[in-house]
Image 1 (cartoon, rainbow, N blue to C red):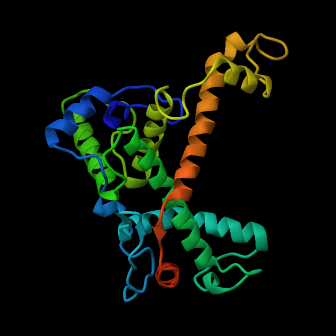
Image 2: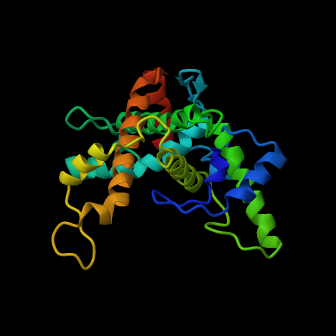
Image 3: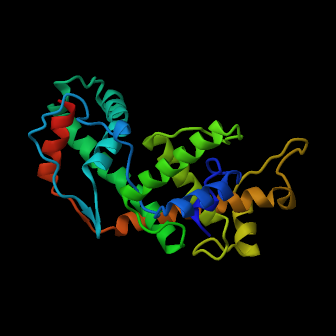
Length: 268
């Protein structure tokens, strides 16, 4: 199975839509399955950054984490940092609030650690996709190449008066969500993938342990009526566990002091 064959699907219960056209485009363009990002989508300085603080070398096994990938992820996690410190300590993070310690937590360090954690989970999902033959590697450059190919395809299709399913244009954040959902759907829909085969006993046990309802049926829905939903939920949970295990197994080399300094330069 190829990732381009499931890119027309939408999150978690995705419906295959534009797969064939995208696959043809990818093959014609010679797109390799890895990742790079739109320059216009990448935060050039992350805000009022001190450009004299260099991004350190960060690696996940053989994969080098690019500065632009770190910045893109950092940008998506700033709200999480603000929410965490507001909820836990009742403080708002202004330009000067990132360095103040709160019960052992320092905001800019929390943000750096959160960003790395999110990146580990993302790369873990791609590494699982590599093992399943869905993508070639977990590189950021490959992701961006596929995004650019899809955007070119959609622009051309729109210009030709063709129907474009889903979004007509993606930025890197929305494309990552889109592709990661497609990868999950492709993996969990193939029973030959590790962890996805379900015995009747597995299904029965999971069904017994949860409540299941459907319209028009009082009480717990019969297993035969919800078997598909039971299997979908089981596989989704198993997939999440696989991603967590893969993330924990990543041999990450992170020079934390340098990364903390770089992160602070992006938020102060």
